[in-house]
Image 1: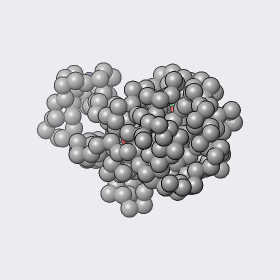
Image 2: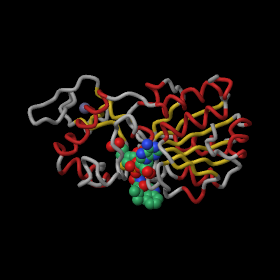
Image 3: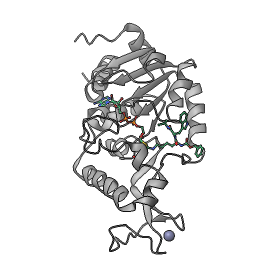
Image 4: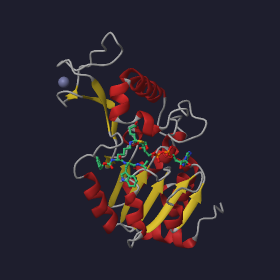
Length: 248
Ligand code: BJW
Ligand code: ZN
């Protein structure tokens, strides 16, 4: 099959020992998880900046919880797609392989990926806004806002705008990128920082930088190879060329 992948791209992926991947909402799109910035999304009348922040939550916790509960309901009905599955397979092949994901959906882990750093938290967990503890037993409350046993309002354990990412995770990411032979950025618009800075750092490092996206992103110009198409199709096709012995 002539897939149009360049020789350099295939050569770099075959020779690589250390691979770092940054994923965004696009990798889960083919599973049926809506992205954030698509013009026709169900929540397109809200920008993520308007819902994913503490001020919005304190102003209207019911609305913000409605958004998160809707997304949690979607996640109960979806499963990982061939894009997630290919990354899990790649991890088994490379001695050093790690995914930094902006996604909160847990689909990389469900596909079998083991080294996954969740830059923006996980939507399935809740944390108390008063005692700050992770809450195991949620009390739904009469107003529809989940509460902690301490009485405080629960919030999803995700990273909102203006909040710090999990301690030390970006620093580890910068170290991993600096040592990487190949860096891949998949399904992100590349407009949210500091996550996107992993890609800008990679573009200035020795790593060969590959992007997979259905359209050019804010990061495309800095990449060595830009593969336009759905990641659930491009990733398996690419991996079939890189490691044919694993497939045939
Ligand atoms: C496909 C596809 C298919 C579709 N196949 N592809 C530097 C400059 C400017 C601003 C800042 C800066 N540094 C920090 C900031 C501020 C801010 C920020 O980045 N703002 C910009 C938006 C302007 N950042 C922060 O506030 C961060 N914290 C921080 O900086 O702390 C330090 C600090 C704190 C306090 C004081 C001072 C400093 C935190 C950012 C947290 C982002 N949180 C969210 C919500 C998480 C929880 C939740 O899920 O609800 O994270 S917002 C939202 O955007 C979510 C995503 O992870 C994130 C990125 O979105 P993503 O994944 O790229 O999705 P889309 O929809 O944008 O793109 C999808 C892509 O897929 C598209 O390109 C499609 O084409 C593609 N696609 N189908 C392949 N089948
Ligand atoms: Zn509490």
